[in-house]
Image (cartoon, rainbow, N blue to C red):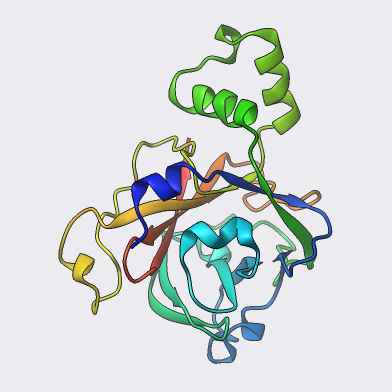
Length: 230
């Protein structure tokens, strides 16, 4: 069972760059789940679960896909990761449609970009959590302020305490109807948060300040994703 301690003690971030593992920010949902090929879902990341830096997740299978229906104004999507690296969709609830979304020439799929999983150093995590939980940055020592500048404001985080601009996620129940936590509260933990610029040259939300947050069930590992707007 995936516990709170494992999630909070294992902060990782995803950065563009070559890795010995197949971590990619990538394209078509049909490559992961052919039956969803015509569904308006973008694959944001596909992470290789052979990487020992992701071992704390306790997930079986080939990969961890982070997907979202980017072109239908957000909403919520829930799914299970299958052992072959595919996706079993549990639910998809679109948000309200807006006349100016998606922005012109929004990519049908994102170009593949190799990424790396990196551990936060103690100093990076200390400074980042201070900013999330306490703030403002000016309260920190100059060396910690420089660490935050080096980290930047736009990165994807896996595990650890994460920035949640609207507070804890409102989804406390597992989306998997076969799971114990489907009818019992508080089995979900924050898995990942994806910023507006996950890799250089890509803007997920245009000028909007949106954080895409993923929660994972501590038992069956079902995932729910939803946008948070600061």
